Image 1 (cartoon, rainbow, N blue to C red):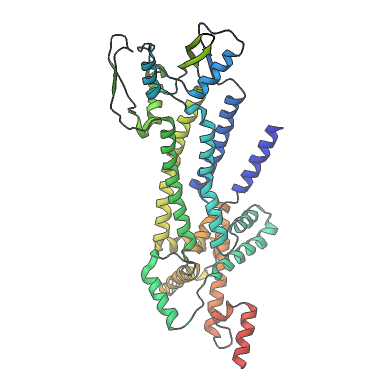
Image 2: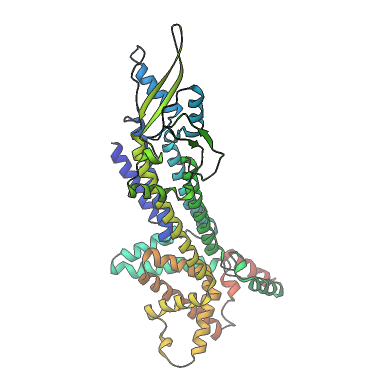
Length: 459
């Protein structure tokens, strides 16, 4: 039953992610949520269902529950790993010293930290959904869903669905077209144009694309924070503390016990190098399988006794594999997100790339028949630039790119072709009959606003 419920949950999660307005790097970030969830469930089952620690002492007090008490105490208090050339501490002072610098307790918190990381990785996706619903003047996810339905539908339904997607996208673009006229509006437009890409607003058609780029920055910072969280949680911080000499704990050698971590932010690479070179955990003390536990005082009849137990930690074998994989996975996610951020910045800041991108779709769908004619190339170029800069703008081109990424370039070309034809037809009507046709301002008014304007004119 639990497995079936988990599969149903995964399918519903997959269905929701398929409607996302994102690219490959964003899907990797969302797929990381599933990976962390699986790791959390796996570690939780190992800790709370199966045996996670076993402790042994040569001589133990009488009582059937002492062994369970010892294992629970060592699990809660933590264990101390020792290298092969180190002797067992013999005095309470030596045990306290090792307890201060060597005691490990992270394995208790692994499922909780993995669950926290899972939630943190999902937050950018929730933030992007909020932005799309509040700043896009329409349900972008419904647009993507309709586009995918059109791409996978039958040929008889495809034309109708493509027209529906084109109308939906055109309505989203028309909503934020500037409709104000007058000197003040022209002055504001000039100020916006002088600021260029520095202005993020719906009116300029830059809100959605720059919100998406900001989201990319958030994902990159999140991935870097996750690497830092992993290393701080496991104790591989790279900080230096004054070494403490411990002569009596080694076999004729002087060892300096400290919290120095020579791995720093490359601990994943260091562990992989240790495994490749054949170095085991007794030499590196990374994810130890065997450690020691000191029970300082147990009240018995006549006084208090201290016990030292040797404990095995099979859970660390699983922790080691999971964290090595997660370290390399998050590093790969960080690099992929950086490359994706650079690509989207180039797309947003390069007008030439936008012109070429839309022109390629117009050539594919073959709606621009005048493109084949050798006459008036400058006029056609100006018309395309006006279509991209004044009508689609950056947000419109961004939505077209998302249609191409999530539903295919063939469907995106058909949608762009329909919008282009509608755009040219409207411009032709405005040029041929400006006196009889309503102005662009009146075309954008709601029906009630049109009636009010007509009544004011008659008055």
